[in-house]
Every structure is written in structure tokens, then in C-alpha cells.
Image (tube, rainbow over all chains, first blue to last red; front, side):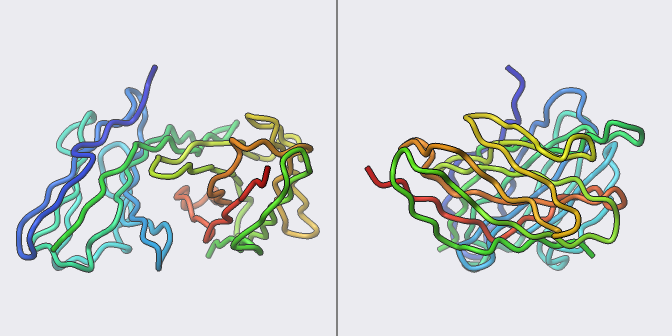
Length: 118
Length: 113
């Protein structure tokens, strides 16, 4: 049963600490997304990668957030230093995007990392 | 730019009655459209997708949606609500250019016994 795996599921940290969230996309998928979900803003796209290359990270605060794909089986989202306003659920999703038809752009989501910064 | 507007933040129905969750989209390109469901403290699950094939799309758990280009709508329906359908539902658009998913603000569905 292929699924996107995110670790940790929950993280509580103090303001100023570094936080690293990890994601294992579904094997064979070429696109990885990072989303943040809050009550106020809903689901926001932070960044996404295709074939491990960053395509768009315009939704991410550049001064403290960074996203990488060291290899095809691992995506990371790092916050340094963390702030209370970063408290949210962070979702990773993966998908297989093709250039021809049929277009397959749906994303499969992980269970999320619930981050609390105190 | 692409966007979706979910017209109702909350919908409440009685068990066994029809469900209608409304969604309008805006996209510069030919869009792909999706509905996702999120149960409390869970991830997001794909209900159904439209990718320019049939305009009436059937999904899981008895849900379906109809793509209406003239109305730029993609409303989600189900003939008979079940208690287990209570959740948050998201309408999502992806255009062929950017290929990233843009989420609506969500509709919380309550099902009364």
C-alpha cells in the first residue's frame, strides 16, 4: 500500500530552535509538494519540486524556511529559527506529473506534521 | 493565476438527504479540478478528479461532481448523506502550466442524525 510518510507526526519546540520535517514520497512519483495548514490561512503551498529540482518556493518565508530533496526518496522542510507563528500542520504530498495525456496531477498527501512552537 | 472559491464555509444536512457542496474556479489554462476530503486530525484524501475527459466525474463513497465550463463550476454532490461523510471538503484546481494545486478555503460538512 503506497503512501507518503511524514516524520515526526507531532513536534513541540521552543521559539528559536531549529525544526526539520521529513517526507518520503511515493516511489516513482516525480513531484513533491509542501503545504501548511492553519485555521486562519487554510492550506497554503510553500514549495514544490519536480524531479528533485525546486520549481516554486515563493510561498515560503525565505529568511527562515528552506526545503530540499537530497535524493528521490527524501524531502525535507527546515525552519531556523522557529517562531510561534510557524505553529501549523505541515503536509507533504507527492504526485506523478506527465506532460502528455492523460494529465495526472493529483497529489497524495501524508498524515502531516503538527508543529507547535512555544 | 488560478483560484477556487468554495461558496459555503459550513453545510449541514440530515442523514439520508442529498449533499451539495459548491465550488467555482478561475484558471488561465485548461484546469484539472479535484475534490479532497479531510477527516478530523487526518490527512487529505482524494475523492475525485476532472482532467478534461467526461464532465461528470464519479468518485469514492458515492460522491460525484460535474464540470461546467460555462459556469466555471465544479460542484460536489451525493444523493444520500451518511454520518461518516462529516468532514472538511476542499475544492482544488491545477492548471496545465503550473501543475501545482491551489486549494479552496474548505467546506465543513455536518451530518445530523
